Image (cartoon, rainbow, N blue to C red; front, side):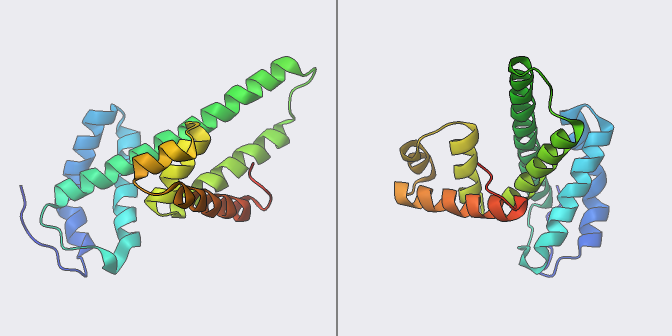
Length: 175
């Protein structure tokens, strides 16, 4: 394992050159799809580029890269969960209504969901987790507060922060 410490102003080209192949192989084994693994590996390094000078010195770059990749996979699975929930609701609605939504209506809804997902990625971890726990998992404020180690009032603030961001992303209320 490499123990080279990358300086605060990380030489991302060196980090990429030394560890991209390893990360790609690791992801391929876990995901079973070379194309998806390549996308996640690339997104992992893009996330590091976005952090820029805030990147801490990396004593264990592979551990850092795997943690970042795992978080990206979690974000991806959450997006898929939102999309699947929407498609399931569409299916239920289609069975109850005499007509299906028009393709342009479906496209607008999917694009809105993508904008909401992008907006949620801009949030710090705790507000994003509170949003997911409340709106996707159906957890009560008290349960979320206990899991996050904060007050229920703070959970409420997190949810308001997330909803305001969703509202701005979509241009209309996201509820």
